Length: 379
Image 1 (cartoon, rainbow, N blue to C red):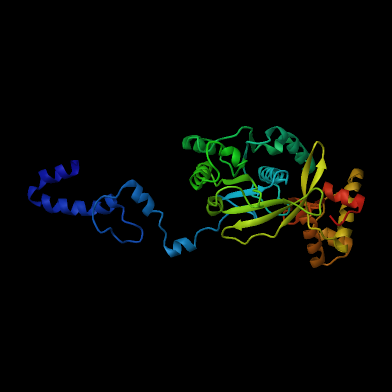
Image 2: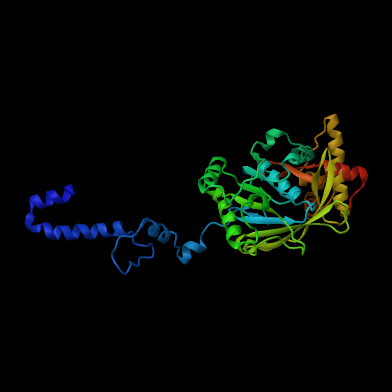
């Protein structure tokens, strides 16, 4: 080094002691002493891989003060997680997966649960031709246009995860930075492998997880059910993923499905969710149902909001706040809050904005108007 050469010329007699002091100062930089302060037993230089691993080690304080895990869909899917949604043929698993994906892309609450809006990529290895009609029906149901789904990307081809290069998956993820990637179906993404092989299954899942190289992407696989009523393939699926959801036809509903939680890592499993497949246009949409009657208060609020929606044609404001609803109905705060919560859970009422004082602006939905028209309050 130039500095050491200069030191040698200025004072050759002191050079050796200076050199020892100089090396001592550089030693921590060369070895990157671990954060906990314990030096390695030997004094060899640490490799880049070793340094990277050492720097990921956290103290108890660091670990316990980390930011809480972010949720993509409240009580359902965490960010940077991997999940499987499986069911028998015709049970509605692709309807449920697409419905979830479209809600995330549009930033709409998913059947009463908060959503973190973000880009979505949908790998449609099966049934891509029929997805267009489903998307059109979904947009019509929610009153949205194609522009509202500008963050939704559909890949209408099967991607073999075992054959695809790691670099390709990383590049795809870096370009789109998806918040959610749906692989429909797992079998079509494993055409060169065996879904009963632990090695093939774990390799395919790991390859899909490379999509989160530059984002907090959640990966959701749509999968088939076996004859015994469980997911098809290796037990390595259950061991590897964070969440598993089962989609089944409801026994007492001609067009009803139930979404059940079979695994939920680091959070409580949710109670089974019941949906109706409601015909709309050339396809169907999912509508959540609890199977219980509305309370009298909820019925009156729904009818009130319906009357406001009709009065909009004559220049009257249709959007209301909880406070204005209380004043119009005479209900107390608790009664109004509980009734509105029930109506929102059943997607009969929706929040369409937030006021300056964080007051929610509420309006009746299309389903709500239909329920009033048909007096079908037992939705």
